[in-house]
Length: 100
Ligand code: FES
Image 1 (cartoon, helix red, strand yellow):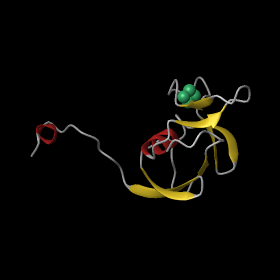
Image 2 (cartoon, helix red, strand yellow):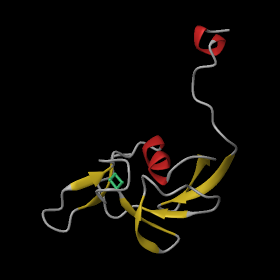
Image 3 (cartoon, protein in one colour):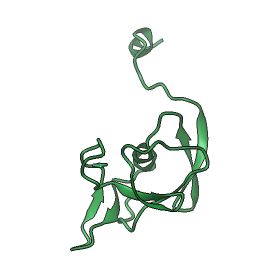
Image 4 (cartoon, helix red, strand yellow):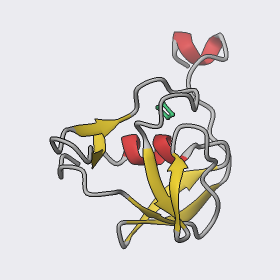
């Protein structure tokens, strides 16, 4: 038993389920936000700004800035940082650089 286990530290994940991320099946866990799924899959940015095509991803993390917007189940403008990942969700990044 490691020191972290002895103290009850470390990540605890809920049940796993599948979501689609840009057409690829990936694993998410109960309690994940959409942003958590994106970041676990290695994405740092997942959309480009309209002016200047600058990469954007997680910034405020609390639903205030809209930097993290994605398309979920056909709904544009979903804030990935506060949207829960749900079983079978179809998540589309919005033209961000392929950094994942
Ligand atoms: S990171 Fe700011 S709204 Fe999601």
